[in-house]
Image (tube, helix red, strand yellow):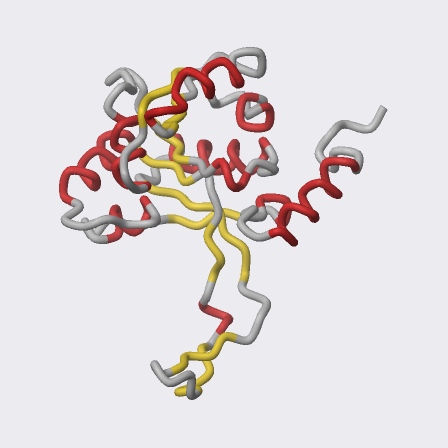
Length: 193
């Protein structure tokens, strides 16, 4: 929350939390940054829609961020917001894929090697013109794990901007160990004194 709130473009933060934990999350985050906490839904799409529903119409740009990417530097948030302000309807931070990627069959037999030069690993926050994100959520027929994917289905181009290795997604024990190690290091984006 501190890193997100440190981005100058962020004027309002809405957090979607499990219904039973709304008060606890509000109390936890209140000392960190001004936040509005809403009850999330059964999946990501419902949670984003619940948060989006309380964003005032006068806010033209919405960023959707994952708590699992809590080390995302403010500079990434600023790059995404700046690209939307410059005219893009949808913007995602990305990194080039560095691993060799194989397409495999249901029986785990390699079908082929995917050209990684055209692949990108997507991060958050993802940025949208608010009206575009609302339209994507209204049109979404089934759950999606990525808001940019819902926008793509509307036929709207999604622009890529550079992400950051620090914006790793914390989902496995090794990710958590790496995050703890990174938090113990000096902030690479902090100005030199």
